[in-house]
Amino acid sequence: MSNNNFKNIELSIQDPDENKFIVECIETFENEVLKKPLIILIWGPAKPSDSSDEYKVNLYNKRVAVKEYLKNLKHDVFFSEEIGEEAEKKLGYRPNPKIFEKIQIERADLAIMLRVSHGTIGEFHDFGNNPDYARKMYVFFDNRYKEGYTHLGADEIFVTHGGKLEEFSYPKDITECNLQDKISNHIRKVQEAIYISPYKKY
Image (cartoon, rainbow, N blue to C red):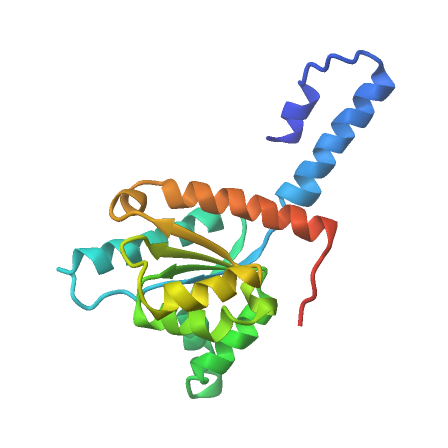
């Protein structure tokens, strides 16, 4: 909602001073909360080498779509591997990804994960059991995979540490915009939480 829209709000309270106060409160909420840009990592599957693997292609394309969607909302959005590529150009070698991604999540506001690959499962186990990192993570997993060590063990610890865990149904949630809607709602909650109590940046 733009500021111009606020000026056209028909408020039930007609007193000019009270109207001004109400509009100022709404504008403050929009400008200082809802328009707060976040630094967001998107962890997920790499671009598949086999274009015939529909599952991998669709999940990677969803990851790209989420990135573009959030960039259009004026957030600063990154794939960790792209940051690694830029570091390699500057340093002359690729930094250890475990250490380099630790640096990234310490400085990010949010890490959104599509936990559908060996790499993302590794990232989840590296960072999801640390409360300082878990509280910044919003993890989606395929609801066909609810057995095994990660879901039955690590997920419980992750949620206890404040991580947000969400299952998705393939292909429906991936081919439609269901994930974007859930992510938008979560980002608003993060923006509100940061406004109330800005958390520690390492």
